[in-house]
Image (tube, rainbow, N blue to C red; front, side, top):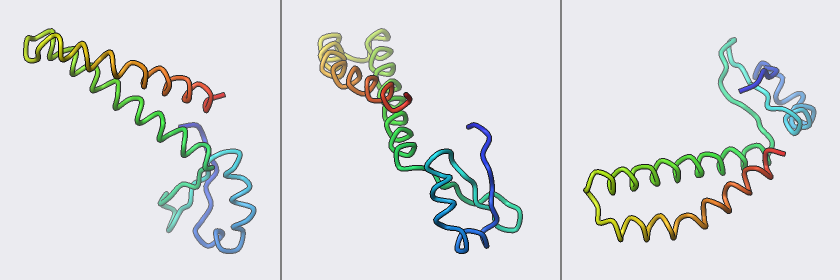
Length: 102
């Protein structure tokens, strides 16, 4: 993650509006007793992170399916059908991630 500004927890209640405005541009950290405890991120950053996690999980399962086929643990027709059905969803997710990253 890139560099971000941190604020002590006491500032949150006094400056919430200002911190939310800042978080809409760049994530911020909240500290308690000089220890980072939480982040505030914009809703668009949060949604982009969720999409990226889902994309990476999908890639992991696709890799496992392909490995199972290659190792003879799964019927080639079933794995190919799974990969074919799954590929449309992956293409749509990649486009959403590219758009969110812009």
